[in-house]
Length: 95
Image (cartoon, rainbow, N blue to C red):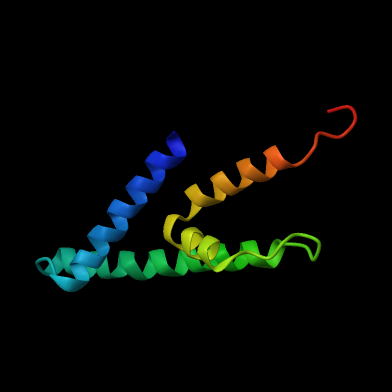
């Protein structure tokens, strides 16, 4: 539930930043939101790049849809992915 709430929040933030590109806000706020948009694109791109770099050869490749979701939702999609990965892995002996 919390992950989905985070995803919704992230969609609202992206919407707010894109709205600033289409219909700019007054001057000081416009520059702040432009910088926030650049920062968000860089951080989410870096997160996706690092995830792709840490995957081993035995793990399945990430689909384009998953990559787009990872870029859009950031850490919230990462948390959902990790939760899914843990659920798929069988528990080893002694765990």
